[in-house]
Structure formats: structure tokens, C-alpha cells
Length: 210
Image 1 (spheres, rainbow, N blue to C red):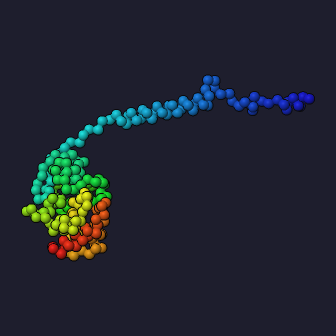
Image 2 (cartoon, rainbow, N blue to C red):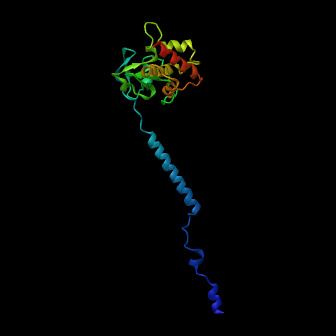
Image 3 (cartoon, helix red, strand yellow):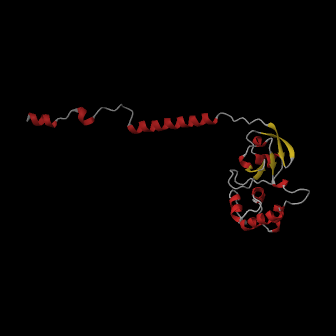
């Protein structure tokens, strides 16, 4: 009988385990931890947003655009595209994608085709910049421009200035470009209206005049 009573008894430590501190439950502990974490994150956001961003100082800058020296005050972060359009009122290059993907802002810098949205204005100082406005001379269109008009190689015209500059690069590098060469030369320029066949024809027609 005594053995049965001893077997039936269980030690307090085995059945109930260590006693939990009074006044604090597992749910309460998790809730207070989450609240403390939220406060810490909020404090971090406030600290991150508190410093004020000071405007960059402007500096005098001289750009040679279409054969003329142009003076402006520009921040170091100003792109060549925005310097041309917003500061010098040269609006031929278009701001479309602003990431060098469409070619709408194409200009020549020292004879090389450049996406003006991807170049800082300060990096263009001392170099010769040519935009679509500088192609015509004495009121006469460049042969390439004339062929664009003649063959109606545009629709909305928004991509046309950059497209013309890219086409001029092809003619500068190839006297009689074939269709494959023209397509390769225009792979960085997008025409959303789809006038590519007429653009190709305009380049070939202008090459014969040159």
C-alpha cells in the first residue's frame, strides 16, 4: 500500500516546472518586446530624417554649344541635358527617359554621340557640343534634316532631334552606310511611332548627297 502511495505521488518540480514570475505572462512579454522595437524603429526614422540637406553651391561654367560660348551658373550635379534646356534654352535635345535608354537627348560632344542626360554639365566644359540646332547653316537645312522632311521620317517628332544626331554620327563614320550599318547605329534610339523604315531611307538618301 505504501508503494502505491509513493508511486502516485509526483514531485512539484516535475509536474508544474519552475514557477513563472508573478505579474508577467508570455503574451505580455512578447507584446512589450514588440512595442519596444516599434519605438526604437520610430526613433531611428526621426533621427535619419532630422539632418537637413543643404543646397549645392552653384559655380560659373562656360559651355561651347554650336560654336558659341555660353555662360551659366550651375550646380555640380546638373546634367548637360538640363543645362542646355533649362539654363540655355536649347530645347532640341528632349528629356524622355532620363536614364540613357531612349536616345532622345542625343548630342555630339567633341564629335562623339552622347546621351546628354547621362553627362554632367561640368564634364562638358572645354569641349565642343553640337545639338540639332547647330546642324543647319545660314538658314539652310543639313542634307540629313532635309531628307527627314522630304521623306516624312517622323510622326510626333519628339524623338527626331536625337534621332537626327545619331544618324549624323552614322554618316560621319560611313560614307555609304548599308541597312545593317544604319540599324546598328540607331540601336540606342527609340521611335515609339515606328517610323524606322523612313528614317533608314532618309539616312541613305542623305549619304548620296554628301
